[in-house]
View 1 (tube, rainbow, N blue to C red):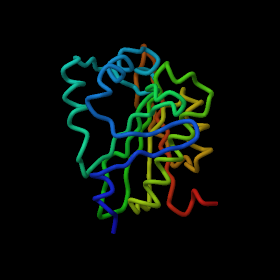
View 2: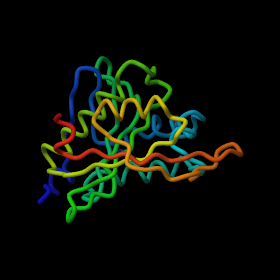
View 3: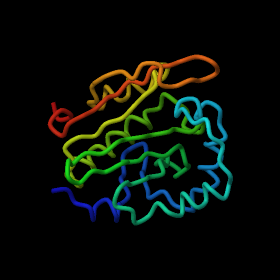
Length: 185
């Protein structure tokens, strides 16, 4: 049985490089800027455009949920916003969830923020919430993210062929997953 209360009342998760804190309205301007960044949109496969008000409502609705948990990723040194991460589609019956992460251009890629945020979130998912499985999808062109996921214990489980059309080209989606026991090897 998973701990749904741990999903509803999510604590700050602190590492050496990043702090994960509840995503909420206080992160509106940073979320808004990230969703207008072309590289972020490409790596997340986001075709839709959103209004400032839609993002405000989304961020405001994050606290207190039991089917997902969203965090803002802050740089530990100065608490500057560098992205967001979430456990999504939490399935209590099957002790499973999805995972997503998006680093903004402010993250200065290659500094380990995404790796540490992923590890912190997986530790919380398995050790606190009690999940058995966490899965994700990554686009074939996002090799940097795929390397991070593999470092954190994710294994490729399958391919959705030509599932994303971006700039007139088709791209595969790679499905990956990690089990509670896998990541401790």
